[in-house]
Length: 191
Image 1 (cartoon, one colour):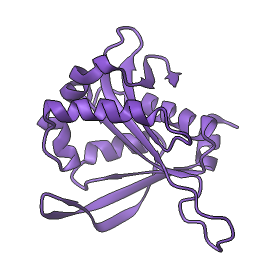
Image 2: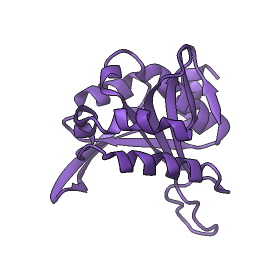
Image 3: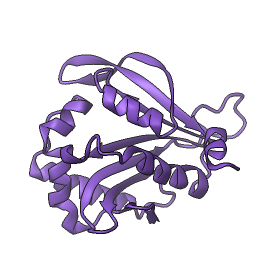
């Protein structure tokens, strides 16, 4: 799996990425935005191992990919795309059909430097062009205003607030939910 933009690429994680992952998720400036404590080194190892194992699943439902600079190869972030399990045929309503949850974490020194549009484009290529999804959604803590602005810039639409949707360390958190639909993507791409 390799998707390249003008300056960034999405790629599979490699065993040598543990330090880069720890540099992302071991920093409280990054994890605070997700309402979680910083990773220990063992958790960075586990993330890389789980991502590598997930890459071999058939069908693949969990995409955890590294975001790296094309020019240097330096790992600057991590994205995830969790494809919803497809419901059985025959039901009147298919919830989650051809949909996925996405997430993005950047190294603290890479936030607010303009990567959101390119990463959003690369995730759109993966989601809609490669996987044929219909809907991709993401959720943020209300306090993470910068991420909300960035995701809107990348083309996602605010849907609303899911009250007390997340539970972290004994505290309930609201989640602000955004989505992008296949038709939105096609309109952005000019198709």
